[in-house]
Image (cartoon, rainbow, N blue to C red; front, side, top):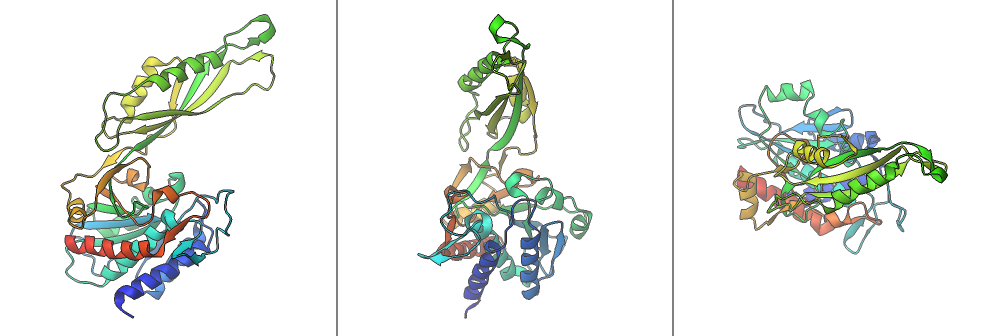
Length: 363
């Protein structure tokens, strides 16, 4: 068996074991253990913190720039439409089925195979760091964000910064060079309670509806070539009323806001506060829009391999990195979170081959 065949076969076997092991966000302890056992069998020195597993290349040199290879091993819960067992890695029609196979198991095992390919090589131009992390699906605080701040992780870098990253998410192995930010906002309309029959009070629903209509009609002027316009969608509306005859004093609604790289979250919030009657409360400002320069060596290497680039409408752990990051991986984002999720076996093989070629161009 050739070295490339072994990398591919080992990656598929690891993916099967990961699919067989439930790993919902915040419950990834068993898949973290699976990844640690795999590294041990491969004789790769590694560490685990919480449910995050990481490793540095064997001849790590803090004087060299460092490249992070990152993907996640948590999954969403299976949708009700599954006809197959989501935890049974069934192979048929040249596909491997199972929860997390496409998002992002195929990416993770392909990056791990790539890391192992380079692990013992000397005189690399870049250090390589592999991080298999938790809580990506819920944008949790105990995943990549926590790992990058751990003292023992930082000690290995000896005060140096990570220079760039490849984030493994299903992109059909094309290059997502920009990514929309996610700003979730709670709107709270305040009225005055009263009896519906006596035409009393100020109906908070009416205030909320006027604000929602403004949100639906408003268009932010700056349009990104990669990400298009800022998109706002009201996705939830509710009152605390249980009685039909009470005019509600409070109406709450949620605004899902996808922000391009031309606006800061602060600008978005100020615009809303200036034009709406409702109280505007951001849930989090962590998941900002990101972009990597088309002149970055990673992007140039990808272009040299015939890869295309685009702006991604979805958010990933790339948003939590304060260094340039390229989102790229095997599989198709359109399959993520769908029933009977799958990835083609050839996509995993192609993913490993293209990741290796990409890094060889850098090295």
